[in-house]
Image 1 (tube, rainbow, N blue to C red):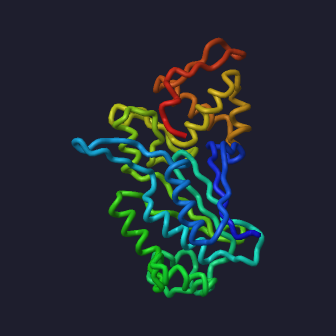
Image 2 (cartoon, rainbow, N blue to C red):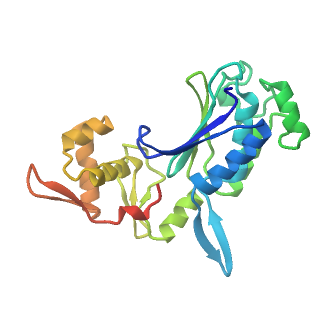
Image 3 (cartoon, rainbow, N blue to C red):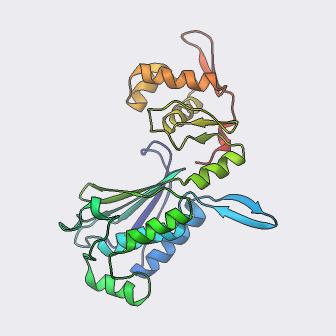
Amino acid sequence: MCAYTKIGFFADNDADIIYQDEVHGSLVMQVEKTMDLIYTKYMKALISYDGIHRKETFFFPKEAFRELLLNAVIHRDYTRPTPIQIRVYARKIRIWNIGKMPVDVPVEKLFKPHSSEPRNPNIANVFFKAGYVESWGRGYKNITDVCKLRQAKLPIPEENSGGLVVECPASRQYLDAERKQGKIIANDDTVAGGQIGGQIGGQIALSERQLEVLQIIKDNPMVTRKMLAEKLNVNKSAVQKHLETLKQNGVIRHIGKTRGHWEVLKDTESYQR
């Protein structure tokens, strides 16, 4: 039976899966169990305090992700033998379901007012009667409202591999909480492989690509620039730029000459993966 949900936690490299789960059962139970797994096992909260009150901050709001999960369950093509797939990373989460978008509701229209055209009307009706969803095509409007309230970035939907993939990036609120805790963070205003890291609020801000370089060095201190370029699928000049940034910020240093090795100077375990 293909009507299940698959969840995996990945390192920066998609090939490196750390752990995974499959969620089976009724669709209603799958939604509840999947939400519970993601927000207890897969997505870690940063802890802060407002006076004596404990506050947990996740990088993407629960209410918004629940809407996306419900969309995936209701609009999935159940004639295809492929489960809903959820990939969780340190600072983003991607949810994919098989099934092309309706012709009248292309991806670019999702955040605009549109009619409700569920692929599976009977499944949609069950969730509607159970109070999980509306029937007016307002799911993405609700997501927008929640993200605005929680200071979160909007999810990014895209048609991919015969279905819809939605990427949920880390919220600014979460990144700010990381900064306050003095962690090495990814600069949320950078584009992977493009921008150069720097100092934000006295803390080191690195791009996702620079974090990838850092992790590779940590795994293999003898790695060369050529090996880094091959692993990251970029040219050596781009690798050199990232290495110089890491050295200038005191994150790494190179010991020896051509056949030397790298030494990591900052506590790279302090940022969450």
